[in-house]
Length: 145
Image: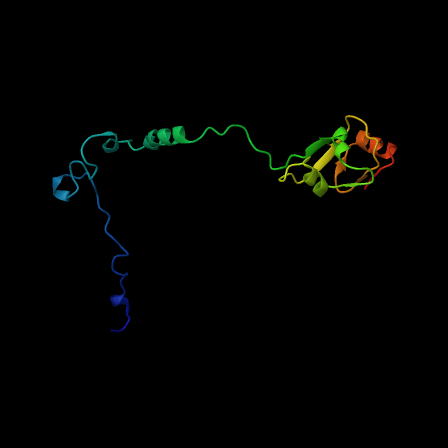
């Protein structure tokens, strides 16, 4: 069969005839127009805001998560006087702080804050230090890198 103008046709099923609903009994979709019998969904303007009633139970079942969680991790603050567990000449780093139990296993950073004096010579490496704590460590003969 050759392709000519009079044989052109759309693919079967691609063009369906529009079904006109609510046009009497003889149309095949008369009376209730395929909407069943009565109820909010059968009415004009129905079906809106029905989803909100179904959502209510779902929203009530969710846990009440309040506030927010910062994406920045909290820095573990260590008072200067807690470094008394270190011996003179030791190095203070995040790993040694974990070994001594001054910092939790999950903490990624720590900061030594003032709050007392220290009389041991310590070397602080890879740990943040406040100005007051730095002055106290250097006064005791230690260094901060």
